[in-house]
Amino acid sequence: METIIVQLPGPSRPGEDGLGEPELLHMGPGDVADFGRGTPGSRTVPIVLPDPGISRRAGRLEAAEDYWRLSNYSRDIAYVVENLEGAGEYLTIAPGRIGAPVPFEFSRVVLPALGGSADFKVFAPQHAYLDEHSSPGAGELTVHPYALDATAKYFLVLVALCEPRLRDPSDSVLPGAWDIAERLRPLESCRGLNRSTVNHHIDYLAFAKLRLDLGDDGNSRTGVKRARLVALALRFGLVREEHLALLPPRRRPVPQESGA
Image (cartoon, rainbow, N blue to C red):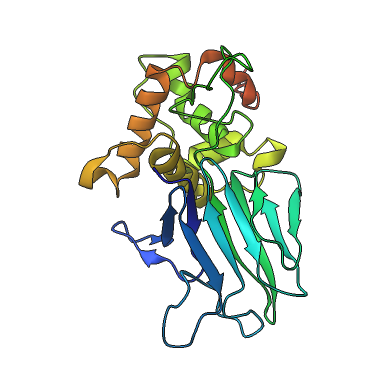
């Protein structure tokens, strides 16, 4: 099971549905991957940042059990790790720092470059959270098989996806990516949501957080992913009726005035 997923910089690969799919690097506990400019003509580092202002080997990622570490090989330049789910929260990794632990689930690693900056994204889907029935000091903690962060944006997407079925179990129509973006956009943290970012969160939920087995057919069909996500989330109580309070109030239809 992977600890982190790195979204590699560079152009996306064309997917089966015609949309671009980012290239991903999956890393499990103990795996390491260097990043930097690399050597021209050969991929000497797994994470290539092709800017002449970046060292050939600028640093290293190391996957741990449920988090990851970042090493900065520069002697005089700090790197920044941004929390993509936070309100401007970030870490500064000092020059020469080895194995700095990163606690964020959604991160962007930013390096200064001649072109302004270079970056890549790191996702840590296996973050562990304390179960409400666990008591500290009572032996080994139970790791939840579906560790979801109710404060994360992907969880809001999941709640909005499950909303119709929660309000009416007989409702078989699931919202599309654009519907979910419109539903969540009144929230301050979701002002920038669009169809593409919602689909990204759906993929993250399907493949990283809830680890759905969709087979060959499900990988390219968003409808299959949405239906399976809702079925699993409701079946195991990952999304419940009380979570609807996280969504913005529903708009009431404006009554039409009858003509005289």
